[in-house]
Length: 326
Ligand SMILES: NC(=O)c1ccc[n+]([C@@H]2O[C@H](COP(=O)([O-])OP(=O)(O)OC[C@H]3O[C@@H](n4cnc5c(N)ncnc54)[C@H](OP(=O)(O)O)[C@@H]3O)[C@@H](O)[C@H]2O)c1
Image (cartoon, rainbow, N blue to C red; front, side, top):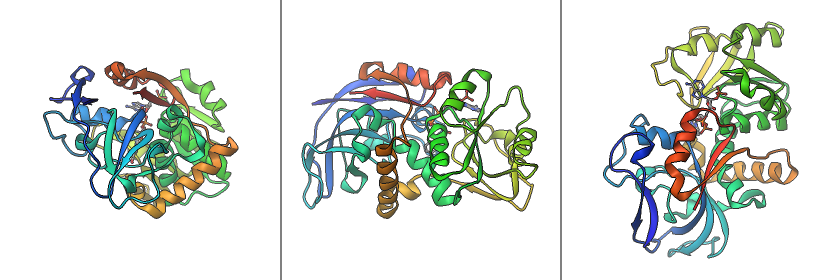
């Protein structure tokens, strides 16, 4: 038996509980991963609260879409991975069934890769989803180029901070948006060329001012909500808005400042594609080894503190990733 986090009902962080579950052998094509640390993602909080893209299968629903650990056992037909190898989990399409909040998890070998960049488990657990999402959004979907102005909302999130680093790595100009003044200096130190404090500044006016009246080439927006049509006015003529999340869960209206490309992005498009995973891993490996990419770990919790980790995520006070060690 081994420990796993489950929940039997939709609700607040208090519904999360640690129970013992059987450790099973990996099936054909599967790998059993001994989880050392997992990242807490907004998707987990949304799944637990019943506002994710689909409802969890209850009772004993699992959580977790990323983890760093060691290969513990491999099933028939698995090549290229062996017990003891340091790995990360790249995708868990049904986290309510196979979630990584556990001591052991069996997953398809295609969703387990050697750890890029020689990271330790905590840093690795803070890296994949944030950087794969930022990379998929900015590079694969929006075609970010050197010199592009990139407006990033929720910039203090793990995805936002990764996007700032990616923009800098490629020679683009990251403009970070944060709701209050408290995180402004840290965002500048994290590489943002400019910071818009949305409680004090008009985002559109500020971005137009910073871009000579043209507007941002790309907007990476994780907030959505009723503010989306106004936010989109910060984009240049024929610019691109990529929606990666809906932190403001109220309905959003379609932006009408056409011509404008609006994309709804889900990283499974890339994290379930082995060719895209190889591109992301290569980009990460080179960036992590050079120091140009470096995940921000906001706070680390123990396995028994998993509910507190969700409370911290919900507080909005984080700067980067919330990680739980197992
Ligand atoms: N599409 C995908 O495949 C994919 C994959 C991963 C993550 N995501 C999305 O990326 C976003 C960030 O996720 P994360 O896990 O990295 O970080 P996170 O913990 O969800 O981000 C927290 C930050 O977002 C800002 N925020 C929170 N609520 C907000 C609201 N109502 N309005 C505006 N800003 C708000 C806060 O920053 P300030 O206080 O500085 O404003 C907060 O520190 C989420 O929307 C998530 O769903 C999408």
